[in-house]
Image 1 (cartoon, rainbow, N blue to C red):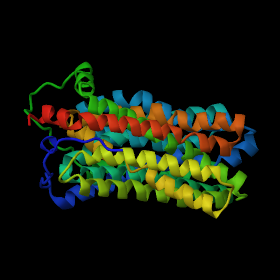
Image 2 (image 1 turned 90 degrees about the vertical axis):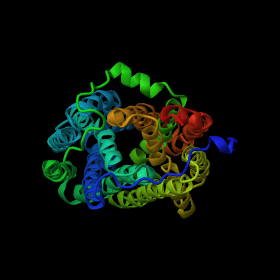
Image 3 (image 1 turned 60 degrees about the vertical axis):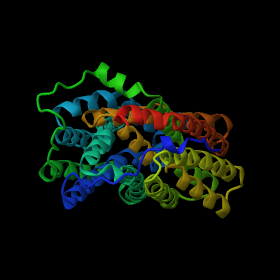
Image 4 (image 1 turned 30 degrees about the vertical axis):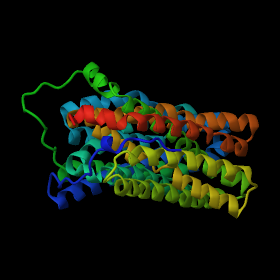
Amino acid sequence: MAIAVPQSSVPPALDEPYPVKRLYAWTVFAMAFGLMVSDYLSRQVINVLFPFLKADWHLSDTELGSLVSVVALMVGIMSVPIAFLADRIGLVKSITLMALIWALATIACGFSVNFTMLLIARAFVGLGEAGYGSAGSAMLAKVFPARLHATVLGAFLAAGMIGAVFGVVLGGLIAKYLGWKMSFIIIGLFGLVLAISFPFVVKEPPRTGPADAPRPSLRAVFRLLFAKRTTIFTFLGVGLGMFLQGAYLAWMPSFLNRYHGLEPSKAALSTGLLVVCTSIGMIGGGILVDRLSRKNRLNRLRLSAIYCLGSALVLFLAFSLPAGSLQFFLIGSGLMLSAGFSGPSAAVVADLTPSSIHATSFAVMAMCYALLGMAPGPVVTGWLGDQIGLQNAMMTVPIISVIASGFYFLALKHYAADRASFHGE
């Protein structure tokens, strides 16, 4: 499926220099990348601990899913106000404070003695992580040229997948030998070290525009964000596209444990391999889009739609098959396709919003993928699993990605005109 656009309306190629020294830009990337790994270590370690929690506390699949969804729910609710504040008090201060909160809350998870305490601690993990993805993306958008935004932002978001890999693998190994509570404590200490180090390495980027220019109000920011149909449809596409990530990251260890007969630590290692496939797709998808968008920015959205549609088809086929090596291969292939839209989506949003509100812009995108994807994905899949079995639930959820692809195609119809209006072309 493709939507024809007159060549005269296609934006020109991207060819901007680095706005800062190249070495410093990549140093900032390394620190932001490390914190994103920590973010997802804290967020996703819970998934591999489901069998231990089910055995110790006799929790239902719905309760287990809620321990994942509560983090995404807090991200969805708090990401915009926190990022709006970050645009005002500074990105470095905000990132440091957020990292301290999620690291300490993760450590607190290890001291929980019942489901309620663990659920509250997990909520604070979400509170700390609420604005980090948007603030980190805004920081990177300031130090890298636009011609690299899909690649850099895609790689930054892929750090979350890498963190998820280490979360399930390390969490499973630590739980096996030291107990599941130590999984939280050790991972939380890693984040704490990074949080303390961050402000000593990264400096606040200069504010663009006149120094005395007033900051726009939250109402004005939302008017800027939702004035263009491209950004509206992109927010909906990325939000629904993340439903698969939330569902499969949460339930893949349990799926492999129940249907492939793997004990928890081996299920964790196999899940880690699948998450590596997701991160490769996220990074490779961004690189491919940047290359194909140098002469035609419209490919940012065209390829995002294709990623969503292709992943839905492959994953539906995978979970229609019985457990085995072919099913595992197709799951990995589908997950590799499923994440390629994230970097290009962030690049589209950055392209259509002022740099002074980039943290808030990315926060709205984070709110959408949290409330539409990452929050409902685990709990809805868990509820479906209680009703029709986990494999049937995993086979059902790819329909959400088909809907996401439709929103990307709708965004594609308006991108050239909206960009010309925003940039005065």
